[in-house]
Amino acid sequence: MARTRIQGASVSLEVAFPEIFSAAERSKAFAEYAREQIGHANQVNAAVLGRPAPYATIVDGRRGGSLDSVRPDGQIVAEWDLISPTIEYVREQLIKHSPVGRAGDRRPGHPGLYRSSHVLIIDGRPQEDGAPLPPLFEEAVFASTVPYARKIENGLSSQAPDGVYEAVAMLAQRRFGNVARIGFSWRSLLIGGIDEWARSPGGRRQKARRGGRPGLAEDWLRRQPSVVVRPR
Image 1 (cartoon, helix red, strand yellow):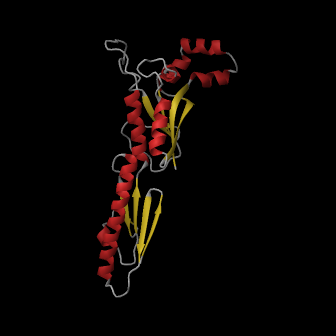
Image 2 (cartoon, rainbow, N blue to C red):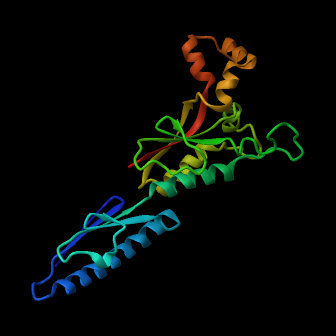
Image 3 (cartoon, rainbow, N blue to C red):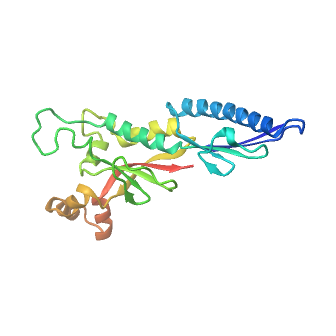
């Protein structure tokens, strides 16, 4: 008899065999059964994500242990990292849908400044490019560090007439909604060019024209379109 429990991004396997099997036979059969179940889960995850999902095995409490080393009465757990491919997809789509500007633009960083301005913030902390994701987190936020991202989101660029962030959030939610809750939002940032612009003469003029309570005006100056990802 075999008992299988599948929950979220992990598979936990325990099996019970007739006592007529030797200990070595029970271990071998358990390992073969685990390979079949893990292979099936790999296919399902790849179909959902559009790419293979990295995973780790825990054999009798040993992370990375060989399946063949399982005890006859042991346990095999396989854990898939489904959130990293989700985050990477959002990043790729933001770059893909970003307007790049006009060729020959001689301003610093142009053309392509907006396309290279997307940053990832996890639980309030900016992440460096290429840095591994923390094993657990509550919220990942993608946002742009250029002040005119709001104008692009409202259709300023003919290269992105429907905006960028809201469209990408919809694409990601449609594809990875069973992995994470993904949505569009507006977030106030204290990083990059946003904070610099808010303190600049142009930012102060915008604040004066908007009026209202100073705290709300400061928040408005730094508000940027964002894609928010919350793991399930």
